[in-house]
Amino acid sequence: MDYYGSSIGRLIGSLKSLPGIGEKSAQRLAFHIISMPEEEVKSIADSLVEARRSVHFCKYCGTLTDDEVCPICLSAEKGRRNKRQIMVVENSRDLAAYEKTGRYDGVYHVLGGAISPMLGIGPNDIRLKELILRLEDGDGKCCVDEVIIATNSTVEGESTAMYIVRLIRTLELPVKITRIASGVPVGGDIENVDEVTLERALKGRTEL
Amino acid sequence: MDYYGSSIGRLIGSLKSLPGIGEKSAQRLAFHIISMPEEEVKSIADSLVEARRSVHFCKYCGTLTDDEVCPICLSAEKGRRNKRQIMVVENSRDLAAYEKTGRYDGVYHVLGGAISPMLGIGPNDIRLKELILRLEDGDGKCCVDEVIIATNSTVEGESTAMYIVRLIRTLELPVKITRIASGVPVGGDIENVDEVTLERALKGRTEL
Image (cartoon, rainbow over all chains, first blue to last red; front, side, top):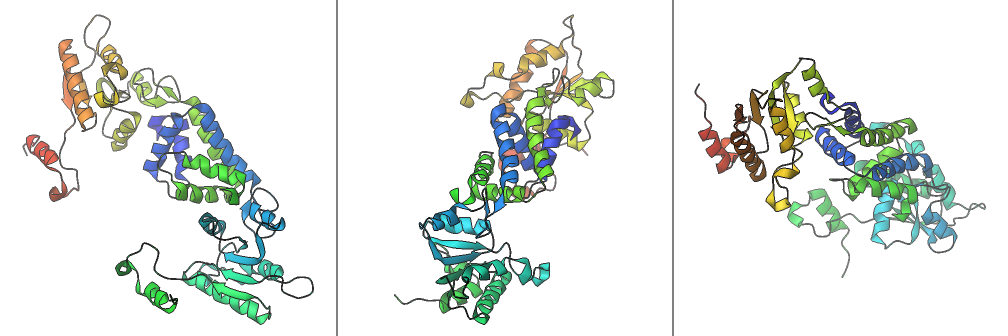
């Protein structure tokens, strides 16, 4: 990379260290960056450092946020979202995906992963204890109406879902537990959908 | 993006402003960045600002570099590369591509684009005058043996190549002018190569 001079080489190296950015993309990005106005570059650089510095896990749901409490939990505190409905997701990106639908007004619980014996992630490595604590109020009664399990539709996600169901049932918490539907994606061609998904779609059929 | 908190939202926004990075990639990168050690993030941020700040055009060949003279021209000054052979390329990325082959030991001339009436780029908008100045020594004699034209094999690149040939011929500079070969890419299937390229490959055939 010597032929670019060291600072451009270093920039390309930095960019290449990020996931999904290869040599060519790093080069393209680097040349774009050095052609940008200096203040804009400064602003991008600041946003990196600032995001890294200010990131916290929400003390209620565990999502990544700037403050002690995330905007969603804050808005639930103010009564603008339904605190009695908790959607359990694997990570903050899944939360964001659901928020984008604009159709969910409950709160979330971010596990920070899924149970995976393959990767050595057990039930104690994800935020399950915190989930149970949120379900119980001080008197051992349940302060939540529904737990919607929205872990991924992968082996790990499904095992995690099953584990949560068993955990809540063992503790005899009187809470409704639901799982998001599996099936044919909207706009998807049935002929291109795998058999397992089709079987799920059939099993989960609803009456019209 | 409110559901992430403002600093993560701002980071995603920053990343999305870069070419080839969409919403999903920006999100993925942002989450990766906030999970990195703080010093690493700082180092990436610094490399952005530093590259932008320290970038210069080499006073000889016009490529992007940290100093007044790029490492390639510097090494030609020291007699380690052949100053009498100039490869004309459109931009610094093309220079880098040729440098990677490790098979060229002449110097370069970076035009900073190609003539394109469509985009309103005329001969005066690219570094052609600078090229001519490099070909002539003070006494109106030519101080270069060969000009290798390595502009892209596009309409703009070809027109630029033709323009350079005519310019040098008009000035009656006694310099050899060559054009890099067009043809079937190495490892390419002939059946997948377009007709124009095949025609070129035929025209440019060499005796074995």
